[in-house]
Length: 234
Image (cartoon, rainbow, N blue to C red):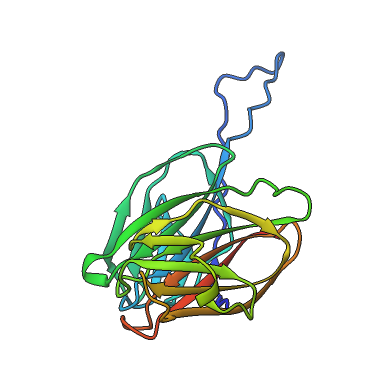
């Protein structure tokens, strides 16, 4: 149920040069430390947006539920802006987080457009143990109440198992869950009920893969709720 609409990515590349190199003693400038950054549009009633890093467009005309691949950017303080594609003067997010070198991040534009805000997640793309996968669960559906999350086999009766995660409020991301490779199904219910609000269907994951499943509202906001599955690794 991944909905990855085409996104125009413009790669940022900058090179810092040392000053005062002499002909007799040439100095090779040290490479700039970088971080990896991707963006998910999860504001259900917001229009398509452009994403800018340090004033340069890195993702253009991004529709709701679409996401970019990882983009290499210089580490350190980076200015990130999100603006309406149809109205570039309308900047809805303007933040300057400090990005660590050799670190992967996901920026989620979350909440209804009147309260839109950035959510910076640090991604753990270190390889899982042999024969395992890693799965992270993110509650980014503003219309959903506190929820229970079940990660089970595709045919498991929810009445026979306890939730994998209980009482998860909006705007919370789980740690990565390490489980054996196989076919899973993620179902999300209002807390203390078995009324399924989000059903991922069967997700077949092979050893070494890492995924982030993000619960989101329907386009425009509210039900029916859904999920976007981000491919963190492999």
